[in-house]
Image (tube, rainbow, N blue to C red; front, side, top):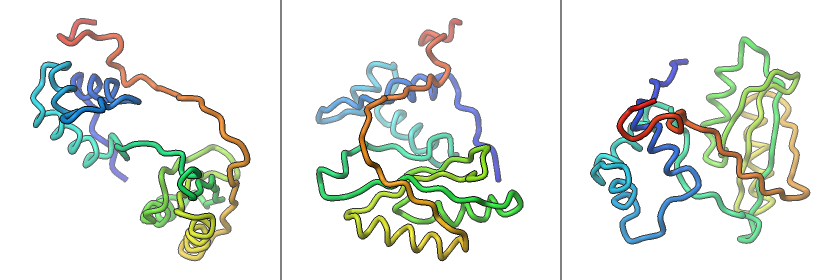
Length: 164
């Protein structure tokens, strides 16, 4: 597995600016670009590169899927260390998988599955189980909490001109 290239100062500023708040305007990337002294094309290209390099694994809105009849399910696998990369690739290949995390625990791979319906979510989990050859432990959401965890990308200590 390759390590993503470290984001530069502008990338970090862009990530922090977009975390949780894309302007709801006719040209949101142009608005963000103006705030960061960039062009709209530069913002879009930087986002493409961050996704292509794996620095960002996803860029898009978060939905309350249940309001539309769908379901999110937290799931976990117990993956042998020697097989972790293969199983991660298998799990991540499913379009229903929103994100995937490695943990230091017996259940060492945790991921979230999104389905348009409850049945679709559990069908995806069954397909993942079959493809991975490992038992999927499903933990459907019983209650929702709004946490809004924001992790700094490192730009907070720098101004837009690079001063620390």
